[in-house]
Image (cartoon, rainbow, N blue to C red; front, side):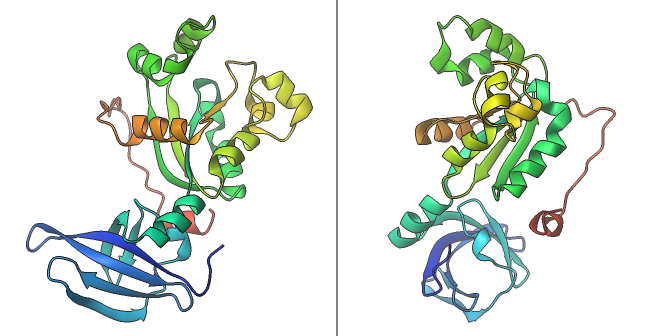
Length: 250
């Protein structure tokens, strides 16, 4: 929950199309009255006097977020002070959720459960993993009896990787998933994702990072590393869900 007396500070970037340059600013967001103030970092001067900006919300305050400030699209690339890093770094914890091949047809219902559980989806993509990528992703399981079967299964069709954000997102997502064994999930957590959509220990609908270290490695694997695009781009079209629909929970 936001403290009404606090201000949060970010390093923000804006692409200036006229100069073909990326310009950097320090953006201050004041929670009490939803105002913003901006400083030009390079020129060391005030760029935007503190003013009301209803297009920026507390929920938008995280590294990687894109906000609209008086018709300029700014991307937060870093925290600008230790206070913001400490407070929002905890509240905006990230984890990886992955919809496995057996549950791709249930993607709508799973996303609905994600949003109803108050997670923020900060990244998402559908990919088809190669055997080498699957082995790298599940590297901690190399040598275990189920490893080969797991790799065959996870490469049998597309998966949807989702970066979730929220306070305690790692534990909260695993709680929403339920036990690894889908049959156990049906008896112990009947409203969980694996209880509803899983079949067994491997075909259990979704994956979730089990620790902060795993969450960082797994989200980087899908969203911040150089991965080959596996989209076929034939007999397809583009569908864009606009920000207003996402923010209104639709």
